[in-house]
Image (cartoon, rainbow, N blue to C red; front, top):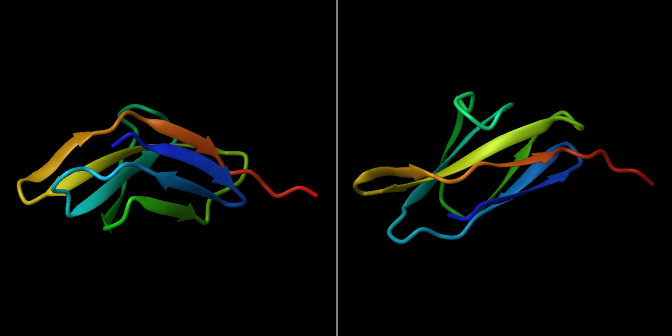
Length: 88
């Protein structure tokens, strides 16, 4: 899926490439890049998602999983970003 993550004020914007035959995507996320990605955001139909309501200056890790009629595919490589507070 080739994901990327970019921190914004109180949120992280995730984007990824469409996966052939995918009907939806799942975002697994957490505070570390490995097995601690126990949280899931499900039912995403597009290839971009803004994870809002996050604490700034905190790193979050993500993996994207495509869902097809045959079930879930493999997880993407992990990506991370830090929510950054806006500064003038």
